[in-house]
Length: 165
Image (cartoon, rainbow, N blue to C red; front, side, top):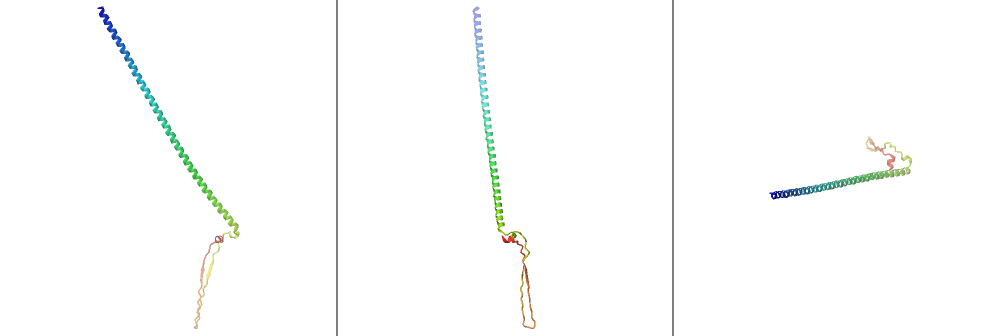
């Protein structure tokens, strides 16, 4: 009977040891699975962080490119406006020079002309009279004389200065 108790105790010890071994194996497997899950979560978080960083870098690059394009457009518009202003100023300078040239030519013309010709005075109308006389004589007792007078008046309103030019 003692042997049976020893055998039962031995079987119980083996069963308990196997249960302890199974518990240790379960704990090792659970720790392994938890470690794998943590590693996978860390890798996913790192990938998400890398993707977010890449997206932020791409957005920053796009914003920089848009800012550069806007600056180039503003500089181009400013250059075009400056060129237009310079052209307008050159045209105004050309007109001023032409006006100055006209004034100089007029001044030289004024020095060449006598002073009394520069006064613009309207002239009185000029009257041109043409008289035609026709006389007919008949050899009968009566003498007939016919006189026809035609008067033409032309008005001339030009000035001496304008006539001179």
